Amino acid sequence: MHGLPPMSLDLVDGQVVFATQPDKPVCSLYDAGMRSHYEEKTGGQLTAAASCKTWINPGSFGCAFVDLEVDIPLCKVRINEIVNLHECGRIINPKLAEGQVFGGMHMAIGWSLYEEMRFDPATGEPRNNNLTDYKFPTSMDMPRLRCEFVDAHAPCSAFGSKGLGEPPTIPQAPAIRNAVWLATGVKINELPMPPQLLYRRFKAAGLFEEVCRV
Image (cartoon, rainbow, N blue to C red; front, side, top):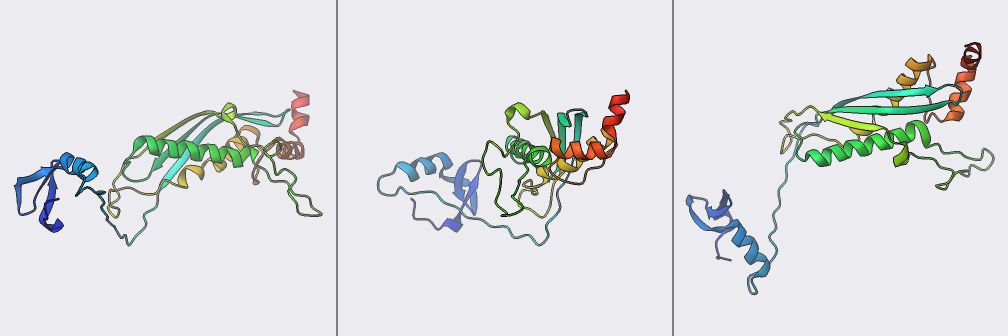
């Protein structure tokens, strides 16, 4: 717009200024944006590029707490509440991070209790390759979800953040498994844990006989 070399300019408090004379404004960032979009002759898209190379990949940390109930006669697990706690560096967008955790919790509940692929042992073809027979949790099946963050600064990243992609999906399955173990005394090392599997494990453990005696 002004025929000035880009390296001679800088941004200070919303103003485009000379890099060597920061107290001398060229124009406001608002005016630059408006002119770049609407100026008939000199208008064009404002673009910028930056890169940050890291030499280490710090781990993200997290854990999950599950409150659930087990109906032994019906072999059903009802999750009342799940709380996820994560340390993933500096939280840049809290709402987006919270949504990422909630989505991961939903996915983990699905493969922990519902999403079982069944195959024909003779042909290997899937028996439940449709949304009627392949079960996954709907909004009606979701428990109370809550997440908290330990806000810390990761010095190796551009803004102090760390990964929050897969961590929210990881701790739910072992937390649900351990909660079922604490509630029933039965250790289950298979996923998912639908009622059919719980029935076989509970029957082998003699839980139905105990319920009948009670």
